[in-house]
Image (cartoon, rainbow, N blue to C red; front, side):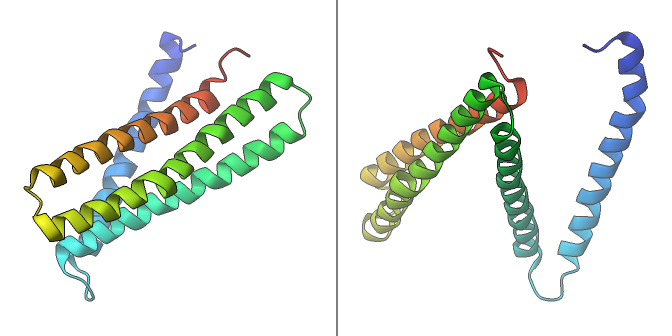
Length: 152
């Protein structure tokens, strides 16, 4: 629990973190805008895409480390939380490969055949966005499970 003294001490840390984050964003934008190989918008989107992929891989590494830690633990709650997190992670992976990918291909086909404004295409887009929201919700619950360790 944060005390007033603790939150006052963390204020410079928060400011430093915000300053570092701002510096990273500004420098990454400068790099992207000065790219000799890519156009400005493409370079910006490429930086964002690769950065998100790095965080995604880092999340997988963190799950592996937590799994190894839980494997060596004698605490049944820690193992149960890890299993719940891994099940959620596997569920979102299955949704991505088994549902979202085929739906995205179907939408691409509908867009080519009937156009993006066609009611059938629009309905398919709405459907995939609902599924994607569920997928993100499951991932966020996995994160909340791992961070808070409820019922321990």
